[in-house]
Length: 544
Image (tube, rainbow, N blue to C red; front, top):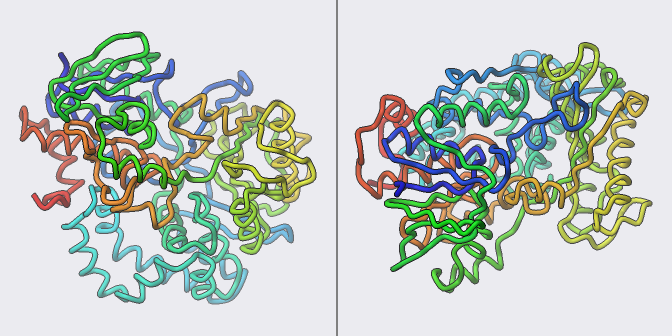
């Protein structure tokens, strides 16, 4: 009998398994897909000479994460690479907002939109400098992050206090208008806010846009050398050196509950896997409660609250093998790893409004990745491995474009939507389509089939909106990895602090399981270092 079973070999599940193994627990990891990684996988499925990231690609949160830093994945061969510039947001008139790891470069680019906007950007950076340490500690530890919040509150007094807190609650449109005279700074904030499902008029979209911009400013948007799968490979390698086996092609169908406690799991092949201590689930909250646990083992309020759980927007993605670089009109975009495509904040608002009305956008906001620009190993010299994604409604009520798309996402609709994304790129890079050697289209059902956590291509485990964060994530009154079933812990992006690749939900779940069983066996040096980094040498916010 094993101490713990981890359901799912996505990054959070692999992080959780590593921390439990570091503490001396025996662990089994069961993954439904035939390969580990969840949404952190790469392949050569577009073209044999091109490495393509199937799902996620850029990892600013991983670079900032004390969880991943504590695992020392570089010792497993993981290497990071950066594009010359972090983010570009070109406009059709040739101007370009630019985010660079050198804040002086960012400021100079913003001054071309309006003199003085570079200084405004530097002011936002100085606030980040003051708050970064405590803010990241609060972000990556369980809710409520008591100790981190105390330190953050003390630093906030010197950073404008309530004025800054107000700014972080603002819609990103309003924050941009208050901080910048020109459109460049507004575009950087709003484009980065739309990495989540936060429209320019949504509360806290200003804070999220600022956070993503500051992460990019400080850490860049790095990529693993050789493909995103190298990050997964490092996590798996670390587990194997500790004797943990990741069993792929093993779909868990039920969490076994007796006397209100998780005592094991059943798999689709009929295997029963009992546990001594805990089950950690790197699966979405709706799937965990509805499919794996069931109403008989849950309070009625949990079952009722699941009706109100909101997914983030559905995702539509296209991968390309390009025979040459993207021919951007704005030359600065050629050296950015990530490029945002929308002709102004109004265009972003229009896009978000169409989604809110259940309409497939006619000019979709497009987030494009230039992977060979970021990592030269991804394709032959002089070429580009690229991708782009946009969002579409979960429930389609109409098409704002000319194709009459219904959201069936059959072959015809997939190809038509991929053409629409390519037309959006063409607006900023005339001649782009002539450089396409091959493409792969990943519609919402395709993404879900490849990773069941990505419901209709929802990549964040649930909306990033304020009403489903902190104590409301994933359901009201939760906010922590513990579930109503003793010994069962939620370790996925559905748990606080949510989506992106940083390992915090997995780490929080592992720590909760370890706390529930006391100190257990002596912690290794790596586990002790991680605990210190994650908690600042103190408790991690549970008041214990």
